[in-house]
Image (cartoon, rainbow, N blue to C red; front, side, top):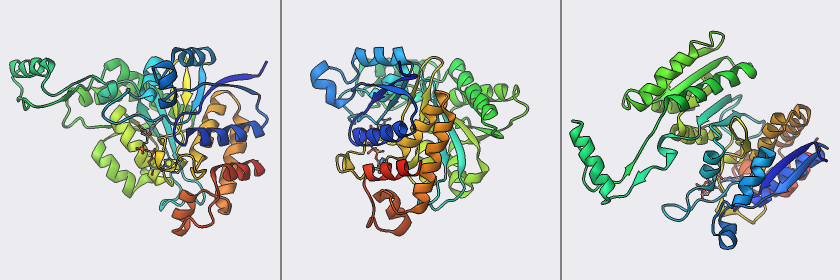
Amino acid sequence: MAKHDVVLIPGDGIGPEITSAMRRVVEATGVDIAWNVQHAGAGVMGEYGTPLPQHVLDAVAATKVAIKGPITTPVGTGFRSVNVALRKHFDLYACVRPCLSQPGDGSRYRDIDLVIVRENTEDLYAGIEFGEGTPQVAELAELVKNSGQAPFRADSAISVKPISVTGSRRIVEYAFEYARRCGRKKVTAVHKANIMKETDGMYLRIAREVAAGYPDIEFNDKIVDATCMGLVQNPRDFDVLVLPNLYGDIVSDLGAGLVGGLGMAPGANIGSDVAIFEPTHGSAPDIAGKDIANPTAEILTACMMLEHLGEQEAAARIRDAVRVTLAAGEQVTGDVRRSQTGSAEGAVGTQAFADAVIANL
Ligand code: NAD
């Protein structure tokens, strides 16, 4: 019997390429993992009538740990996001996205080391929406009118933004516990409480309450727009940021941009029972199947998974090997090469980069 059982969901677009690179790197460390490969996404719709078949959910429920590639979500129509469905099904309430500079990552910033903790289950991402012209929108208009608040236009579509005391408390607590465990100094709660006094206002009040229980960790709060400017101007002022779902989604990509782009940013979705690891980036259909995607984010995501499994040494070895490979700058993928030299000339493919990392283990 293997020491660890892990579900591997290759996903869509560049998913199969980067997850196979990641798997080879992890296997090269000698960590004993039994990979249970399960498919989800657009590719299984024809066969199962759903992008997220029950047997995939059952497999993840059994292993409690999964690592995935990105899965395509059709825009505006078609099925809802498989990624969001997985987070909801397993109540993976904390999305953790470290943004750490790598040597030669091609970023215009150096020495970035911050962590984004995004609430993963509520907010405008809850998926409660009413289409323009529906009776529900008319009912809501009536409700708003009766509450004495300013009316909205009759031809509006409406998305509902639920932010709960429970959801806010557990994500802020997670951020503080994470800060304590990882020796971090400061937590910043990000919000728009000046405008959304009920939802974000309550989130901020809860954040302050939770912060009072962690006197060893510095706490401040910042409005989301000012946070974006601050991240661009003085990113080293930040340590751990904790955000509601939608702001967390957007600021995560900003954070990825500080450390060399989406190809470099790992991520984890953590619940009280199950953890699913996935990079920040999407399925990149524009470069799929060409062996040019950067697998670094997926490989660093595997490092987060290995730490979760208690395999700290293997995680550290892989991180060092990635750092050495990027620093050497000779066997890097096109996105990195382009930001280093202005041209992708001389770049290597996804699998060749993985080979270089393996050689540096
Ligand atoms: P994307 O992250 O797929 O791509 C944005 C840009 O970054 C593209 O130019 C792409 O080529 C580049 N890029 C992304 N990853 C890269 C990598 N590893 N190496 C090199 N370049 C990389 O974002 P998108 O185009 O907005 O989304 C495409 C699809 O992915 C959509 O269907 C979206 O819903 C889905 N998506 C899935 C997840 C997930 O599975 N968790 C996350 C985000 C987006």
